[in-house]
Image (cartoon, rainbow, N blue to C red):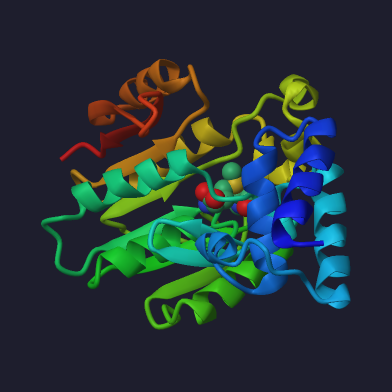
Amino acid sequence: MSYRELLASATEELERADVPSPRVDAEWLLAHALGVSRTELYANGFRSLTPERERLFRELVDRRASREPLAYVLGEWGFRRLVLRVDPRVLIPRPETEALVERCLELLADHLEPRVLDIGVGSGAIALAIADEHPGARVVATDNSPGALALAEENRARTGLSGRVELVRGELFAGLDGPFDLIVSNPPYVKSGEIDALEPEVARFEPREALVAHGATEAIAKQALPRLVPGGPLVLETADGEAPNVAALLAGLGYDGVEIGEDLAGRERVVDGRAPR
Ligand SMILES: C[S@@+](CC[C@H](N)C(=O)[O-])C[C@H]1O[C@@H](n2cnc3c(N)ncnc32)[C@H](O)[C@@H]1O
Protein backbone atom coordinates (compact mmCIF):
# COMPACT_ATOMS: atom_id res chain seq x y z
CA MET A 1 0.00 0.00 0.00
CA SER A 2 1.12 3.59 -0.66
CA TYR A 3 1.37 6.15 2.14
CA ARG A 4 -1.89 7.67 0.92
CA GLU A 5 -3.76 4.37 1.05
CA LEU A 6 -2.33 3.52 4.46
CA LEU A 7 -3.31 6.94 5.81
CA ALA A 8 -6.85 6.55 4.51
CA SER A 9 -7.31 3.12 6.10
CA ALA A 10 -5.71 4.19 9.41
CA THR A 11 -7.92 7.30 9.51
CA GLU A 12 -10.99 5.08 9.12
CA GLU A 13 -9.83 2.77 11.93
CA LEU A 14 -9.24 5.73 14.26
CA GLU A 15 -12.59 7.28 13.29
CA ARG A 16 -14.36 4.05 14.19
CA ALA A 17 -12.64 4.19 17.61
CA ASP A 18 -13.94 7.77 18.12
CA VAL A 19 -10.44 9.24 18.25
CA PRO A 20 -11.04 13.02 18.15
CA SER A 21 -8.55 13.93 15.36
CA PRO A 22 -8.16 10.71 13.33
CA ARG A 23 -6.45 12.08 10.22
CA VAL A 24 -3.86 14.18 12.04
CA ASP A 25 -3.08 11.33 14.43
CA ALA A 26 -2.70 8.90 11.51
CA GLU A 27 -0.22 11.33 9.93
CA TRP A 28 1.80 11.60 13.17
CA LEU A 29 1.92 7.82 13.50
CA LEU A 30 2.95 7.22 9.90
CA ALA A 31 5.65 9.87 10.14
CA HIS A 32 6.86 8.22 13.37
CA ALA A 33 6.91 4.75 11.79
CA LEU A 34 8.95 6.15 8.90
CA GLY A 35 11.22 8.35 11.03
CA VAL A 36 10.33 11.47 9.01
CA SER A 37 8.41 14.71 9.66
CA ARG A 38 4.67 15.02 8.94
CA THR A 39 5.26 17.41 6.02
CA GLU A 40 7.63 14.93 4.39
CA LEU A 41 4.74 12.46 4.06
CA TYR A 42 3.09 14.66 1.46
CA ALA A 43 6.19 15.01 -0.63
CA ASN A 44 6.29 11.19 -0.87
CA GLY A 45 2.59 10.33 -0.86
CA PHE A 46 2.73 7.59 -3.50
CA ARG A 47 5.65 5.68 -2.00
CA SER A 48 5.04 2.45 -0.16
CA LEU A 49 6.45 1.13 3.12
CA THR A 50 8.70 -1.86 3.69
CA PRO A 51 6.68 -4.74 5.22
CA GLU A 52 8.50 -4.19 8.52
CA ARG A 53 7.59 -0.52 8.74
CA GLU A 54 4.02 -1.24 7.62
CA ARG A 55 3.71 -3.73 10.51
CA LEU A 56 5.09 -1.15 12.95
CA PHE A 57 2.65 1.47 11.63
CA ARG A 58 -0.32 -0.89 12.06
CA GLU A 59 0.76 -1.64 15.64
CA LEU A 60 0.94 2.09 16.43
CA VAL A 61 -2.51 2.68 14.89
CA ASP A 62 -3.99 -0.19 16.93
CA ARG A 63 -2.56 1.31 20.12
CA ARG A 64 -4.07 4.70 19.28
CA ALA A 65 -7.38 3.04 18.38
CA SER A 66 -7.41 1.57 21.92
CA ARG A 67 -7.42 5.27 22.95
CA GLU A 68 -3.87 5.25 24.30
CA PRO A 69 -2.82 8.92 24.12
CA LEU A 70 -0.92 9.92 20.97
CA ALA A 71 1.94 11.25 23.12
CA TYR A 72 2.48 7.87 24.81
CA VAL A 73 2.32 6.04 21.47
CA LEU A 74 4.92 8.41 20.01
CA GLY A 75 6.95 8.32 23.25
CA GLU A 76 7.69 12.03 23.11
CA TRP A 77 5.85 15.32 23.14
CA GLY A 78 6.64 18.97 22.45
CA PHE A 79 6.47 21.46 25.32
CA ARG A 80 7.47 25.05 24.59
CA ARG A 81 10.95 24.78 22.98
CA LEU A 82 11.64 21.26 24.24
CA VAL A 83 10.79 17.76 23.09
CA LEU A 84 10.32 15.57 26.19
CA ARG A 85 10.06 11.83 26.60
CA VAL A 86 6.67 10.84 27.99
CA ASP A 87 5.19 7.52 29.09
CA PRO A 88 2.46 6.37 31.49
CA ARG A 89 4.60 7.26 34.53
CA VAL A 90 3.85 10.95 33.92
CA LEU A 91 1.10 13.34 32.95
CA ILE A 92 1.39 14.50 29.34
CA PRO A 93 2.37 18.21 29.40
CA ARG A 94 -0.55 20.40 28.32
CA PRO A 95 -0.85 23.70 26.41
CA GLU A 96 -2.30 25.43 29.50
CA THR A 97 0.90 24.55 31.35
CA GLU A 98 2.82 26.41 28.63
CA ALA A 99 0.82 29.50 29.72
CA LEU A 100 1.84 28.79 33.35
CA VAL A 101 5.51 28.80 32.29
CA GLU A 102 4.97 32.01 30.31
CA ARG A 103 3.63 33.71 33.46
CA CYS A 104 6.62 32.48 35.51
CA LEU A 105 9.04 33.87 32.91
CA GLU A 106 7.25 37.24 32.98
CA LEU A 107 7.52 37.35 36.77
CA LEU A 108 11.21 36.39 36.63
CA ALA A 109 12.15 38.84 33.89
CA ASP A 110 13.98 41.24 36.24
CA HIS A 111 15.89 38.53 38.13
CA LEU A 112 19.38 37.59 37.00
CA GLU A 113 19.74 34.32 38.92
CA PRO A 114 16.39 33.42 40.45
CA ARG A 115 15.94 30.37 42.71
CA VAL A 116 12.80 28.58 41.55
CA LEU A 117 10.93 25.63 43.08
CA ASP A 118 8.58 23.39 41.05
CA ILE A 119 6.31 21.11 43.11
CA GLY A 120 5.19 17.94 41.26
CA VAL A 121 7.74 17.87 38.43
CA GLY A 122 6.21 14.96 36.42
CA SER A 123 8.02 14.77 33.06
CA GLY A 124 10.06 17.84 34.03
CA ALA A 125 8.08 20.10 31.70
CA ILE A 126 7.81 23.24 33.88
CA ALA A 127 11.21 23.03 35.58
CA LEU A 128 13.09 22.29 32.36
CA ALA A 129 11.24 24.92 30.29
CA ILE A 130 12.00 27.62 32.89
CA ALA A 131 15.68 26.64 33.00
CA ASP A 132 15.76 26.51 29.19
CA GLU A 133 14.19 29.94 28.69
CA HIS A 134 15.71 31.81 31.65
CA PRO A 135 19.47 31.35 31.33
CA GLY A 136 20.18 32.38 34.95
CA ALA A 137 17.46 30.35 36.67
CA ARG A 138 18.37 27.61 39.16
CA VAL A 139 15.44 25.26 39.60
CA VAL A 140 14.72 22.68 42.31
CA ALA A 141 11.93 20.29 41.34
CA THR A 142 10.25 17.64 43.47
CA ASP A 143 7.87 14.73 43.07
CA ASN A 144 6.81 11.86 45.31
CA SER A 145 6.59 9.44 42.37
CA PRO A 146 9.83 7.51 41.71
CA GLY A 147 8.68 6.79 38.14
CA ALA A 148 8.08 10.45 37.40
CA LEU A 149 11.47 11.41 38.85
CA ALA A 150 13.25 8.78 36.75
CA LEU A 151 11.67 10.16 33.59
CA ALA A 152 12.33 13.78 34.63
CA GLU A 153 15.97 12.78 35.09
CA GLU A 154 16.06 11.32 31.58
CA ASN A 155 14.53 14.53 30.18
CA ARG A 156 16.98 16.66 32.16
CA ALA A 157 19.89 14.79 30.56
CA ARG A 158 18.28 14.83 27.13
CA THR A 159 17.76 18.61 27.21
CA GLY A 160 21.28 19.30 28.51
CA LEU A 161 19.92 21.16 31.56
CA SER A 162 21.37 18.91 34.27
CA GLY A 163 23.59 21.68 35.65
CA ARG A 164 20.68 23.96 36.53
CA VAL A 165 17.83 21.67 37.56
CA GLU A 166 18.01 19.69 40.80
CA LEU A 167 15.54 16.82 41.24
CA VAL A 168 14.39 15.81 44.72
CA ARG A 169 12.13 12.95 45.73
CA GLY A 170 9.68 13.79 48.49
CA GLU A 171 6.24 14.83 49.66
CA LEU A 172 5.49 18.40 48.59
CA PHE A 173 8.00 20.68 50.40
CA ALA A 174 9.69 18.05 52.61
CA GLY A 175 13.29 19.13 53.28
CA LEU A 176 12.98 22.28 51.16
CA ASP A 177 13.22 25.43 53.26
CA GLY A 178 14.19 27.97 50.62
CA PRO A 179 13.81 30.83 50.45
CA PHE A 180 12.79 30.79 46.79
CA ASP A 181 12.24 33.73 44.45
CA LEU A 182 9.32 31.92 42.79
CA ILE A 183 7.40 28.74 43.53
CA VAL A 184 5.35 27.11 40.77
CA SER A 185 3.09 24.06 40.65
CA ASN A 186 0.67 22.31 38.38
CA PRO A 187 -0.84 20.21 41.18
CA PRO A 188 -3.26 17.32 40.81
CA TYR A 189 -6.65 19.06 40.70
CA VAL A 190 -9.20 16.65 39.21
CA LYS A 191 -11.94 15.69 41.69
CA SER A 192 -12.01 11.91 42.24
CA GLY A 193 -15.69 11.68 41.26
CA GLU A 194 -14.97 13.38 37.92
CA ILE A 195 -12.25 11.10 36.65
CA ASP A 196 -14.39 8.50 34.95
CA ALA A 197 -16.24 11.19 33.00
CA LEU A 198 -12.97 12.33 31.37
CA GLU A 199 -11.96 11.13 27.92
CA PRO A 200 -10.53 7.55 27.90
CA GLU A 201 -7.03 8.82 27.07
CA VAL A 202 -6.92 10.56 30.47
CA ALA A 203 -9.10 8.30 32.61
CA ARG A 204 -7.58 5.00 31.48
CA PHE A 205 -3.96 5.86 30.72
CA GLU A 206 -2.64 8.87 32.64
CA PRO A 207 -1.35 8.29 36.21
CA ARG A 208 -4.16 8.82 38.70
CA GLU A 209 -1.80 10.25 41.33
CA ALA A 210 -0.86 13.01 38.86
CA LEU A 211 -4.52 13.89 38.31
CA VAL A 212 -6.22 13.46 41.69
CA ALA A 213 -4.93 14.46 45.15
CA HIS A 214 -7.53 16.00 47.38
CA GLY A 215 -6.43 19.33 48.86
CA ALA A 216 -3.08 19.56 47.01
CA THR A 217 -3.63 23.17 45.84
CA GLU A 218 -4.50 24.33 49.36
CA ALA A 219 -1.55 22.48 50.94
CA ILE A 220 0.88 23.97 48.40
CA ALA A 221 -0.53 27.50 48.86
CA LYS A 222 -0.13 27.24 52.65
CA GLN A 223 3.31 25.65 52.67
CA ALA A 224 4.76 27.93 49.98
CA LEU A 225 4.17 31.12 51.95
CA PRO A 226 7.02 30.77 54.52
CA ARG A 227 9.40 29.54 51.79
CA LEU A 228 9.11 32.56 49.49
CA VAL A 229 11.25 35.69 49.69
CA PRO A 230 9.16 38.77 50.61
CA GLY A 231 7.24 39.71 47.44
CA GLY A 232 8.08 36.36 45.80
CA PRO A 233 5.28 34.85 43.71
CA LEU A 234 3.49 31.53 43.93
CA VAL A 235 2.16 30.55 40.48
CA LEU A 236 -0.47 27.80 40.27
CA GLU A 237 -2.31 26.06 37.45
CA THR A 238 -5.98 25.45 38.21
CA ALA A 239 -8.83 23.40 36.81
CA ASP A 240 -11.11 25.08 34.29
CA GLY A 241 -13.62 27.14 36.31
CA GLU A 242 -11.60 26.98 39.56
CA ALA A 243 -9.39 30.08 39.13
CA PRO A 244 -11.68 32.45 41.13
CA ASN A 245 -11.75 29.98 44.04
CA VAL A 246 -7.97 29.55 44.00
CA ALA A 247 -7.55 33.35 43.80
CA ALA A 248 -9.80 33.71 46.88
CA LEU A 249 -7.78 30.99 48.65
CA LEU A 250 -4.51 32.86 48.03
CA ALA A 251 -5.96 36.21 49.12
CA GLY A 252 -7.40 34.56 52.25
CA LEU A 253 -3.98 33.13 53.16
CA GLY A 254 -2.41 36.60 52.95
CA TYR A 255 -0.89 36.64 49.46
CA ASP A 256 -0.76 40.13 47.89
CA GLY A 257 -1.54 41.21 44.32
CA VAL A 258 -3.41 38.04 43.39
CA GLU A 259 -3.98 37.78 39.62
CA ILE A 260 -5.75 35.37 37.30
CA GLY A 261 -4.22 34.61 33.88
CA GLU A 262 -5.58 32.92 30.77
CA ASP A 263 -4.23 30.22 28.50
CA LEU A 264 -4.08 30.69 24.72
CA ALA A 265 -7.67 29.47 24.42
CA GLY A 266 -8.76 32.34 26.71
CA ARG A 267 -9.62 30.08 29.68
CA GLU A 268 -8.64 31.19 33.19
CA ARG A 269 -6.08 28.55 34.18
CA VAL A 270 -3.27 30.37 36.01
CA VAL A 271 -3.40 32.12 39.40
CA ASP A 272 -0.54 33.91 41.11
CA GLY A 273 -0.02 35.91 44.27
CA ARG A 274 2.98 37.33 46.11
CA ALA A 275 4.22 36.65 49.62
CA PRO A 276 3.76 39.79 51.75
CA ARG A 277 6.75 42.15 51.95
C1 LIG B 1 -0.58 17.40 37.36
S1 LIG B 1 0.97 16.54 37.46
C2 LIG B 1 2.06 17.80 36.84
C3 LIG B 1 3.28 17.28 36.14
C4 LIG B 1 4.13 18.36 35.43
N1 LIG B 1 4.58 19.37 36.38
C5 LIG B 1 3.32 19.03 34.32
O1 LIG B 1 2.85 20.15 34.53
O2 LIG B 1 3.17 18.43 33.25
C6 LIG B 1 1.23 16.54 39.21
C7 LIG B 1 2.51 15.87 39.71
O3 LIG B 1 2.53 15.99 41.13
C8 LIG B 1 3.01 14.80 41.71
N2 LIG B 1 2.48 14.72 43.08
C9 LIG B 1 1.22 14.39 43.46
N3 LIG B 1 1.12 14.44 44.81
C10 LIG B 1 2.34 14.81 45.28
C11 LIG B 1 2.89 15.02 46.60
N4 LIG B 1 2.14 14.86 47.69
N5 LIG B 1 4.18 15.38 46.70
C12 LIG B 1 4.95 15.54 45.60
N6 LIG B 1 4.50 15.36 44.33
C13 LIG B 1 3.21 15.00 44.17
C14 LIG B 1 2.53 13.69 40.78
O4 LIG B 1 3.32 12.54 40.90
C15 LIG B 1 2.62 14.38 39.41
O5 LIG B 1 3.85 14.10 38.79
